[in-house]
Image 1 (cartoon, one colour):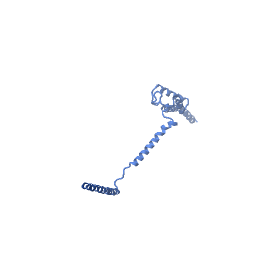
Image 2: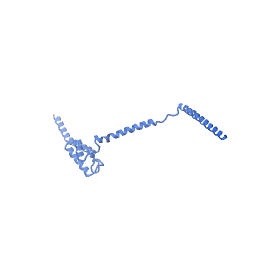
Image 3: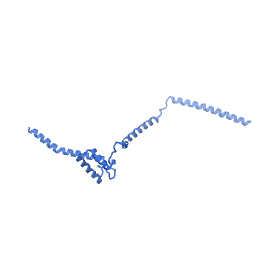
Image 4: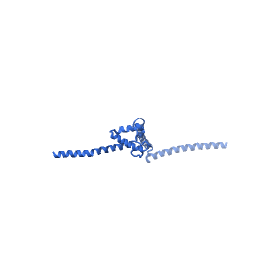
Length: 168
């Protein structure tokens, strides 16, 4: 029985000391997460967690106060959004026109991959010389020779006509 009470005493002391610290650490982690989701309204360039302005320090204090009051992350973000507008959020919401900021890059990436794929297929290197190519070359030489002969005949005929004109 003495061991049982000693165990209960130990557990109550353990949870008495470490649970509030754990809850405090949890609140601090939540505060830092919320700070990283909000942009400092003084210059709109950096998150509250990284900014060193008076308003950023005030916002940090407000966040911790809201967390101590038991408000959730979504409620706190909503409070700041109502106060400063949607611009205060580091990442746009995925609703309405803002959804394009999330979806559009994905579609552009897919279109780019498709363009590269089809361009590579279109401009694919031709295979090396095959056995059919020399035969094609011979056919082209025959055609070229056929046209050369015809050209020579026509030129010769024109020359013969012009000689007849000269003699008469």
